[in-house]
Image 1: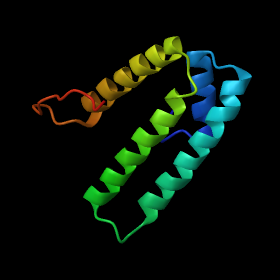
Image 2 (image 1 turned 180 degrees about the vertical axis):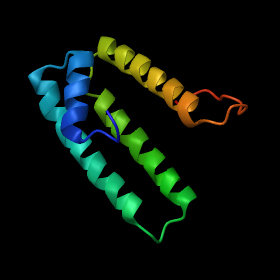
Image 3 (image 1 turned 120 degrees about the vertical axis):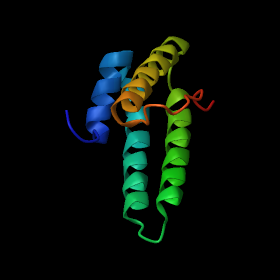
Image 4 (image 1 turned 60 degrees about the vertical axis):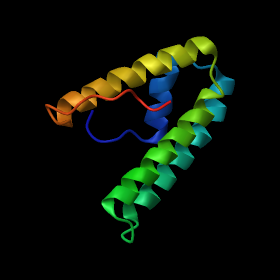
Length: 107
């Protein structure tokens, strides 16, 4: 799959990976939709520098992940952590600097 997933695809992926209940899906979908809207707003804001855009996007992702995690069970949080770790490794391998020192993910 190419390009970022929309909220519906993200929800479907999380649902399959984390075995979400219907109640969890109904709580997570608005978080994903809001995150996409805000992310598009950040991307289209030409008054922001690239660093500002990146900083705002990172902050938005952290906030939405915190809200998303509040809905999950401990077991689902562990699975989500593993999934995100694999994604970070994949992205670093695909586009990261080859000799850049790796730092631990922010907590």
